[in-house]
Length: 172
Image (cartoon, rainbow, N blue to C red; front, side):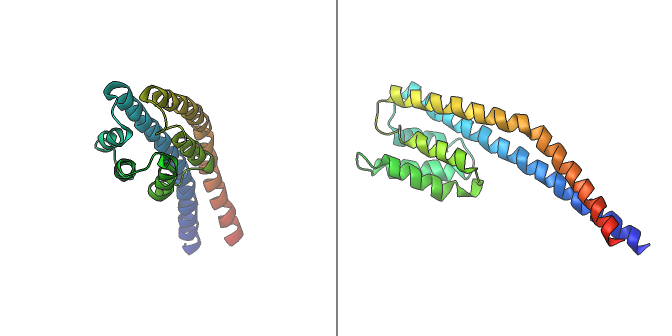
């Protein structure tokens, strides 16, 4: 009887681990989609208001959730006090400081940091164009993640169940 209960608990735990892996993959996709949403907001603010970057970050920060809100508010404060060539350093530090909790893959962090090399140095039309190019690259990354999502979820679920069965066989 105890072996049966233990077997059920092991199978439930490993299946749950596989399910959580699939949920983490879905959560990662949602993070990328939200970053795309923020970049679209920044692009729209730049195009329609022609406001300085500090104001654009502040206006976008009001409409987003944490940790993005803190990131954009921090950028707003720092951009207003910056010297001419400091924006890229501010952008890089803010991503490392405020968005580390997202646990983005290194290639996505690098792409987001590269975006900062174009902002703050040009007119709003050129900045808007660079935001558009970043969104296009991000769209490709989102599509890759989306295509692999269902397979990763299925693999996670199967490995969870199979791992549980394997442990049960070994333990019995």
